[in-house]
Image (cartoon, rainbow, N blue to C red):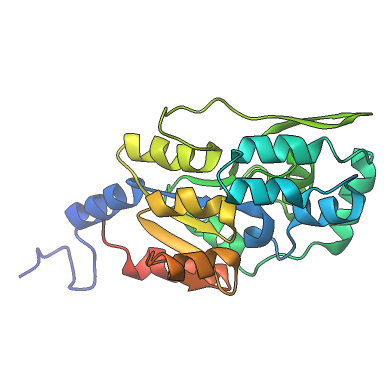
Length: 239
């Protein structure tokens, strides 16, 4: 029997508090290029504007010879195009994966920390987030860029955990250290270390990351729309 002031359809206060605590023990992290966007903006810029063989550094990363930070720093110095040109180009060609705005809204309403974590160019990402009205709604973790005549210099944030490989898996470790479980959404090889640590891994369907997850038996859910992530957060996750 429920107390007189509650119907069977009314959540009890203790249940509401329990649900809120469960949500507050979760964090959502999303890669930007190829995940929030349909276009990998950094790869697009490298293909069109880089001077030299930028892909050699990706191959060295795959062989374990370079860190993610090393790769991006070296590739950034191969780009000598003015920021305004790059931003205008990416505004013209970049599409967005559906329903990221709904995921943001749900996380903010539920007090779930949500962040974008990327090894891309911060001035491009910030511009595109502003264009969509998302720049004040999500935190952005990325390298700081400085455009010079010699190329784009990138300075990465200091890693908090000595076991971390890069800023992506470092942020997962940070939330774990605060007692939170982590949902991580990504699409590429650079997301793999973070995805392996995530409690709720998501990989973009048809992506390199999705292939790697199948090869390594990582139980990632494959998604093509952020509505699919939202449905899992709302109905499937048990904390």
